Image (cartoon, rainbow, N blue to C red):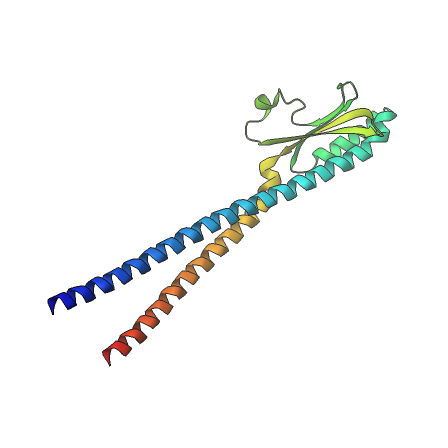
Length: 192
C-alpha cells in the first residue's frame, strides 16, 4: 500500500514536472519569437527610413543637375538651405565634379570635422552623384541626424512592443485561469 501511495505521488510529481518543463519551454520559445519579431520590425523601419532618405537624395540630385551645369550658385544655395531646414538634416553640401565645394549649409561640411562640431548627433551620411547619362557633373552630400530621423519610427515601434507585452501577459493569465478551471473539473471527477 505504501508503494502504491509512493508510486501515485511520483506519478503526480512527474506529470507536474513535465507540465512545468513544457511551460518553461513554451515561455522560452515565446521570448525568442518576440525578440526575433522585434529585431525584424526595427530592421524594416530602418529600411523604410533608408528608402525615404534615398528618395530625398534622388530628388535633390534631379533638382540640382541643371543648376550645377549652369553654375547657378544662388539656386543651389537655396536648395541646400531648404534641405537643411528639415529637422532631421544636419548639413548639405554640393560639390563640383572635382569634389570642390560649390555651396554648403548646415552644421558641418566635412566628415573629418564631424567630431569637433557635434558630439550629440548620430550622423548618417549619404552621398549622391549628380549625373546624366554617365556624365558626372558633381556630388551631393547630406548628413542626416539618425536619431532624429528614426525617432518617430522608434516611438511607434516601442508603443507597439509595449502593447504586445500586455497582450502576452493577458494571454498567460488566460492560460493560468484555463488550467485552474481544468484542474477543478478534474478534481471533481476524481472525487466522485
